[in-house]
Image (tube, rainbow, N blue to C red; front, side, top):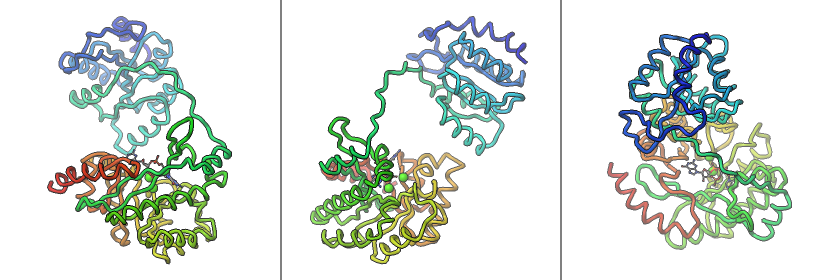
Length: 436
Ligand code: C2E
Ligand code: CA
Ligand code: CA
């Protein structure tokens, strides 16, 4: 019903400057926000009653720049015409003809760079799927609300809005060639950082995960996501993993020598497991460092586990027969699946951070986290949660009986020299957390 829209729109357009320079002073009457300008809003809903009601509510909350559109087409026309600088689109999902999903897809393809709030009567699973769809688009989603949205919920969501900062020129990401990796290997440009893994009941430090970085002569510290895939594709992962294991074991031997009896976790790719000699080689490295296999946890990253053929399975079984720890990394994503868990003699189940952070409030991921921990317990595996970012994440994991936690809340990956200072800080934080 575009007619309805055109009735309301002039009032909206009239209140809006035609460029992005909206007045600094117009903050919502009772929001308490004084330093921020007020966002301009566009409500999109095919139900005229709902449109009127929500728009009156927003006005009563002190927002003055409110436009309405009674269909997705009308909203796209208005936004596409570039006549109005809209900061936040508040959008219904269920609309006839062009529905909310198509509207948001087309909005993402347009040059609109504002924020979106979803209003919907749909349950949390559909809302979650829509949010996932939106993260693949250049639209920033402030959140989703049940329809009709109340004052407080709407205010909370709109308070998350931040004025757009004009994009600054971003240097293109450097890309690397197999020759670059070879040079890095030959001139020892790899470094390891270590991230703590702590016992959730006692807070004790149980182990460290070694995470490789590339100390690039021009680009500084380059993170593994930028080169591990290439290393796997071009065959450089073999020598890289050998270096990582050797360096991590040398460091672990030093920590043991200093009286810190923890384990070391390293990441291994599927390609490493294809090497027929891998298990024997790792066994020899451990013996050479005067450590025992139980001191080393091999985290199997699943990105390429795919159909487990007999060669990697043989390597994994041989490693386990030598008493190395085996962890199924990123459990719950990709191919890190129940089938892998059934077929490989893992000793640790490491739950992907996508099921950990924010689980207390999330009705969708919380049961998956609890279920994964239950599976680990019933199979006699150590349950490890990665991506523990907040005290809420930490306390939930304690409540549901997870064994080990890792994440920014406990400690970020650090160079080996950082361990002493981290331990001192953690001792203080830990005593408060364990007393709770
Ligand atoms: P991963 O094995 O899942 O390692 C955890 C990653 O999550 C690390 O990123 C770590 O810095 C990050 N992280 C830790 N705590 C948190 C948290 O609380 N929140 C969030 N959002 N992130 C957290 P990093 O170091 O960039 O490593 C990325 C991935 O690269 C690793 O994921 C692993 O799959 C791979 N990788 C790292 N080192 C090696 C290696 O030596 N060999 C192989 N094959 N892969 C490696
Ligand atoms: Ca890992
Ligand atoms: Ca992970």
